[in-house]
Image 1 (tube, rainbow over the protein chains, first blue to last red):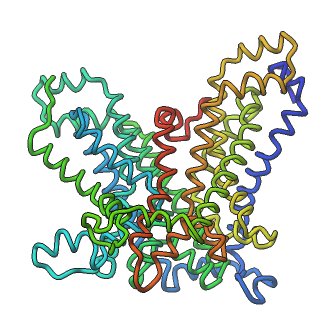
Image 2: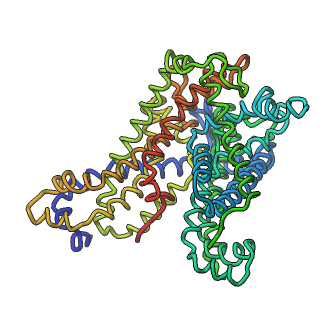
Image 3: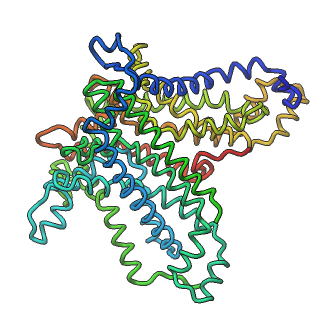
Length: 298
Length: 269
């Protein structure tokens, strides 16, 4: 190898030490790659968590993948996940994050600090605390019933039973908007002020300025943001699982919960692996799609 | 340029803020009420008794479990990442950029999809315990830590190392006396960030811990409020605050350094 030519002399002197220090990291990355290969490989088997098939598993070809489409469960969960991602991340977090970022730019003083800290706190909370808060808030004797519905004379509603999907969407918007807000705040700071002012002088309204000037200039930030929150939300497990466990029925059974149940409650590790692979494939396709979208010329 | 918000806009913002904050108000009012019943009201019996209960017995043990897992994961991740990040930053290995992009891809990969092989491997090697959780979380966090630290090492001026080398310092001395002290802020960011990630983690310990005494706080809190019957709101609220405090404290501690690695995928060629 021609490594040593342009290598710093103190590094080539202690090459043994360099190799030694890198070994653990190589092993860790190797383990990650091993896990990925493993999950793909065993998605073609009937491996089980317990019983005879946990040792004597056999190859079953594409049976698990066929089951994804023929058995009840996967397609429903895929649909729930897509709606959950669309409403809570792409619409909720992105849009609200952008609106807040663009409105709060004009704001100074304590109100801005107060709102920022409030948004940040939701983001910083551990998932399970957020789940507990929203379960308690929407419970039959919870905050919404006792503060809003009760005084207005309505009967109390158990929101998690009757409106499970909207409640987990709201909870995830509440939890995750901070990331989009921070990213769009930084993005809007990068838009030169004189460009906006010029548009203002020309008589452009706020909407026109946003659509024609700001949005095109922060296009790459929008892409980055959408890419990240889509990936996170698509495979998000703790919040929804702790709030509803996937129920009632299948209403909030996102793919990660479906995968968890099939693998660790029912014990079909092979089938669970196929679900995992399908999730990774969807995420990968979405990533490619967004990157393509970003690179496309005007 | 006058861009003061209109009155209606300010009102709308206040409304958003109230919605955002009200769960926290509920949490505080219940945590400091020793006879809390889960509704929003001023504490009837104000006191810190709930916190005392949350810190003792099995819930106190769960806090200790969380600390062990988070501390172990953060320390192991930083140590392993630093060892490889420094050479990665200083040596022009052929295909280095491809390697870095490979790391970015690995970092973006959702860990939920890898839970089955991780669980299966841990089961086969007898690692369904805290050590297994620490190892698994470190492996999952490594690509991110490696990328961040590599970027931090890139900002450490190489001239100092050259000067030390001319003076006759060994690699060990250069790294120990110059590089590591200079990148202390970077190491701290990665350490605290990994600590928070491990502290918040739910799915892995849910799979790995079988007994209540081995639960970290995430699983403990879930098990407590998932129970049927009378929910002890005061206790759960206090427990939640204790559980959330470190993650929030870490953020405000690192606020200034945070934007350095904000998106965490900055690859400089």
